[in-house]
Image (cartoon, rainbow, N blue to C red; front, side, top):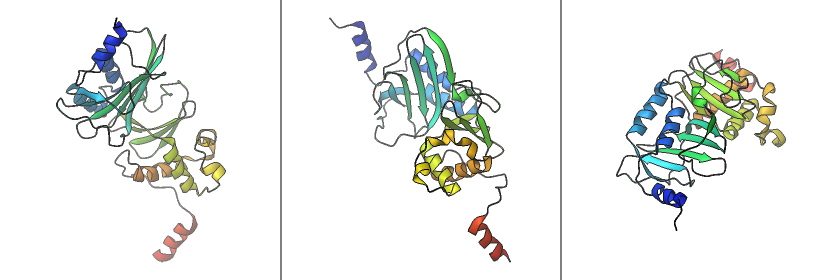
Length: 254
């Protein structure tokens, strides 16, 4: 006889379908309406259905307009919201990616790769979307390092989380930054070519004290030029640069 669990699985496999109540609750949690940028995502999702399971399997869903064909081929977009709910049985993470056209890729999954149940006993929930300047990390409640990029953009490094994100005061959004590409830009910015350092992105967190705010700011500006996270207009003067570039500028200005 088919088990209740199996029946629920079959019902979840029927697409398109509306978001389950628990799915919508957690999505709205990581998309706080007091932030203009996240409020816009809430508005978009309110008019969407689940088109299909995404390429990452259980818990990965493609949201879109009813009647549309789910895009499971294009490269995954950047993460714009991330959080977790800790329960007595497991921890479930919630990931929302940047919309591509009229579709949004989301993931709500347990630490073991399972789908979130409709009922559980919750212990704690947190999201990076709630972070604001001066606050500790939402995940670990430990201090973070803040680096001003512009008057409205702040780069945050949470050593205990091993996370980097960018806070945009205009939209109220926190964009997670994948460490590998950012670290590559930092190495180029510093002129570090030793493979024992330059190719070991995990050293970023242990060696963070070696890098000044100007180093981190410059690395992010270069990173954003290639892996665009925000529209960046540098409205603060850059730190003075030395070396051949500065020498040639002085020569040609004469």
